[in-house]
Length: 200
Image 1 (cartoon, helix red, strand yellow):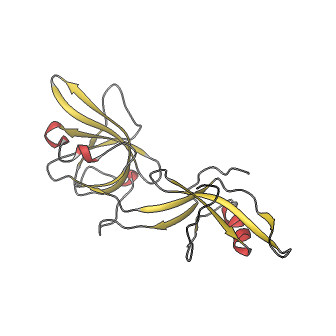
Image 2 (cartoon, one colour; image 1 turned 90 degrees about the horizontal axis):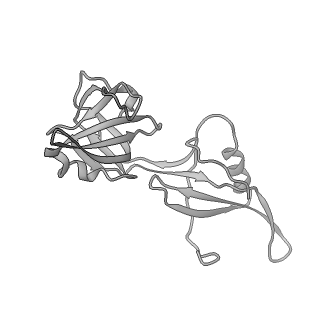
Image 3 (tube, one colour; image 1 turned 45 degrees about the vertical axis):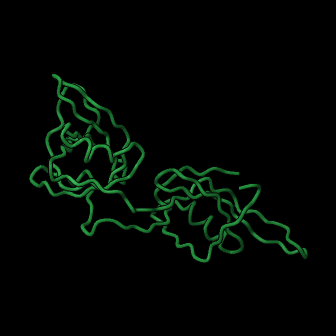
């Protein structure tokens, strides 16, 4: 089976989140402190400088761009603990300050600083990415008929995988769409059913 690398160009998407539209890290500017961002937590660690404890994070937006974020000890319990590594979260109302220091965790100009108004909420933004897509197979079925079959895997933003297959003309259509070179393809799956195959 041929393997296709994970690509954001083929997504099955249904987005639900706060009413205000989130922005990407490239749009953040220091003149505003009511930004809303949708982030994935890549790294998290506690830092102690001159006996002052902070929680530090490296976050990624939906395009993969990274930014550093810092949370004072005062807010670690109420805000920082919700930002678990690997999870997607919405963060709203925070300060934007220059990212300085001798050791930079990202190449972003700015960093996020939590304050008393910062709100961290769980993400209901759920899109599925098609990966591990094989080739279209001709399967001999009962009665001598042949049917086309395409096997692939769906992955969510938490890296949970679900094996799938599509039959008939849809197999060829999906295979062609996944292998196109340009543009984003959004696929709507309806009338699918769960089944058990080879113990899975």
